[in-house]
Every structure is written in C-alpha cells, then in structure tokens.
Image (cartoon, rainbow, N blue to C red; front, side, top):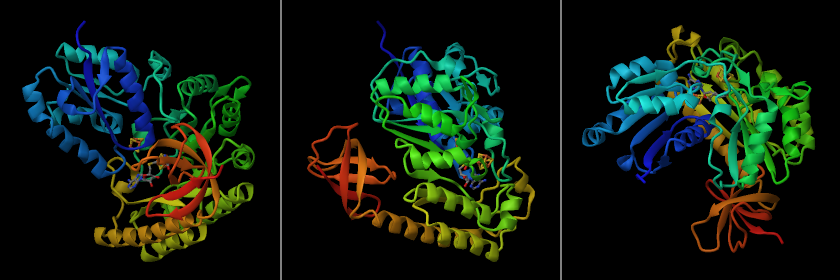
Length: 440
Ligand code: SAH
Ligand code: SF4
Ligand code: F3S
C-alpha cells in the first residue's frame, strides 16, 4: 500500500473557518490524506483565509510567497487557497501567485475531492459558486475518530445585514440556516466521539431559523432540543446581532442549565450617528436596554463585544460615546479593531479618519476594555465555578480547563481527566487566567 498523502492546513479568521478546516480535512481524508503539522512534508497545502480586514487578506500573499522554494523542490506539491479571500478575489490570487493550483470558496468545500483530482492532473481549478445544496451534508463520510471535549458546529451561515464596513455578506453569501435534524444528528455524533461542549456557530447565529419538525425553529428552540442530548453538558453560541436577540433566547439564558452564562454581543460603536452610518439598525440606548433585560434573565452572564474605532467621520465626541457605553456595560472580554477599508463595501467611499487619530483611539479603548476584563476576571476569586478540563497543565498534576464564563482555569493536584467537569473554587486571578482548587 502506498503511504498516505499529507495535508497541511493553515487557518485564519473566525471560528467558522476552524470548523470549515476540519470539514475540509475530513473531505480530503476520504481521498487518502492525513493531516501533518508541517508544510515541509505536505503533498497539499491549504490556506483557509480571512478577508475581514486588510491585514488579514494581505497575509495570504506573503504566506504563499514563502512556499516558493518548497514547490520548486517538490513539483507534485499542490497549493490551494480556501475561505473568504478565495471567495473575494479568487481570480486575482490565481493571477498574482502562479504557485496556486486550486481556489475554493466557502460554499464549495464539498467539491474539494474532485478539485483535488483535477489539480493532480495538472489543471488549475477555481470554484467560488454559491450552490444550493447543504455542503455539510455532502461532507458526511467522516471517520469516527475520537475528539477533544469541545467542538464547533455551524448552524447558520452568511449574513443579510450589510453593515457598511463588512465583507461577510459578500464572502459568505446570503443568510442560510441548516435544518435542525441535521444539526442534532451532528451533535449526537460529536458527543459519541467524546465532545462535552458544543459552540453553535453562525455569522448571525441568533437569526437562526432552520427547518424543524413543526416549521422553522428559533435558536432558542434548537438549544432546547440540544439540551435533551445525553452526554452533552454545555452549549454556547456565537456570534449574535443585537437586533436578533429574541425573547425566547433571553429567557433560555435564565432557564436552560446547559446554556452557558456567556454572550458575545457586538455593538461596534456607542454613537448613534456612527451606528446609523454603519447601518447597524440599533442605537446605543436600545443595546443598553437589551443588555439590561439579558442581565435580568441571567444576572451573572459575562458579556463580550466587538468594537470598531476610526469608522469614517467618527469624531472625538463619537468616540467618547463608545467609551461611555463600555463604562456602562462592563465587558468581561472584548475585541476591538481599527477600521479597515474594504473594497466594495459602502463605507470604503467615505471620508476616512486620520490613521494616527484612529490608532490613538484604539489604544484608549483597549486600555479601558483590558481594565474591565481584568476586573471581571478578578471578581471570580472566591467563587465556585464548574470547569471542563481540556488539557494537562505545564506542571505535574495540573489540569487546565474553562469555566462556565469561558475563563481559563488552572487547577493543581487535579486527579480529573480531559473531558471531566468538576466544581472548582477560584483562589487567584493572573494575567490571562484563574487558578483554583477542586472542591470535593
Ligand atoms: N458576524 C459577526 C462577526 C463579523 S466579523 C458579527 O456580526 O458580529 C468580526 C468583527 O470584525 C466585527 O464584529 C467587527 O467588529 C470587525 N470588523 C468587521 N469588518 C471590519 C472592518 N472593515 N474593519 C475593522 N473591523 C471590522
Ligand atoms: Fe458583518 Fe454586520 Fe453581518 Fe456581522 S452583522 S457579519 S458585522 S454585515
Ligand atoms: Fe474572516 Fe470570513 Fe470569518 S472574512 S472573520 S473568515 S467569515
């Protein structure tokens, strides 16, 4: 028997790309590929790319350039580009970088095996269609390998919101929800392979409206179905839009024990003028009232967010409104970015903020967010949390896992195994993680 071919995948961008990379590895697994951690011994290199900011997109070209020597040594090496840059500028990639054999957009992964075969024949292949079929259904021939205790599961993809800065509606296409029975089957399968915690993914996950037995289901209804899966201990979901935060989902945060007290709810900015120009369709006030209602349902919930500073026409006063909103919410964690002009999006045409000014605002916002993050983390000291152990720690007998609130927790003298859940008392708070001791 010939040795298996080796596949090296590098993943950029969001969790959905992580999920997609797993599916691509499985699809090519059916063609005799096994994954390798090094590009040097690969027969196929796949870059799963992100287009969200200019820096992310440019990385692809520099990374590809680095494979020149490798390809010269190994003429049979095939190089592919997948993901959102592939979708946005597939033709240009082929033109700019002759090393590339294959370009596949996020909606065409199930066609990878045929594409790989063509590339092996020496053809250049590009597929950035938006086909109608459920690509995940076509990717089912996966081996039943054991898995770690946490997994992502895509339930919804694409976006119809068209925020004025964002490429996602163009790279991922229109908003589509997967039917509930397929999601439940996939969840069941994950649990049978050792998964204890599932994070439901979607660019607009709380807009989920997949077909169920009695018509379309909401995300909350899907969560309640997953709640019944024996052996599944924790459910999370990301990313949500404030305008799709329906009552039944807020309520589920108070009543569904498996649904974790953590919510990523990006607001982007605190000035109503800027929110309007971003086409966000919510105000700072409506966002704050929403957070209030969520905290009534689940008082200890940890709120996470995304922010953009230096959006076109943002003044110092607009930026101050963002700081004010942050002060009011008290984020447990947050991601903040300097606005990056994306070709083809409406905001790209507008008067841009001075980059030095935007840098300064980003620094000020990040200082505030870091302080809040630390305060929320420190406030866990003395409290009891549940930890799902994910790996051994650096020291003998130490284990590391995540709390319900998604804080990393180190536990010394821990006799538990990966995948176990245990009650832990938090004893101290460090730079990026907590330390605690088993309670029983
Ligand atoms: N679907 C998610 C995530 C979108 S991308 C959502 O709607 O929240 C993740 C984050 O990247 C966004 O929330 C936004 O804060 C940031 N982002 C998107 N486009 C950007 C751009 N052009 N410049 C800077 N940040 C951007
Ligand atoms: Fe992008 Fe806005 Fe859609 Fe989020 S809601 S993916 S930021 S267009
Ligand atoms: Fe990036 Fe595409 Fe995700 S642009 S953030 S990889 S949806």
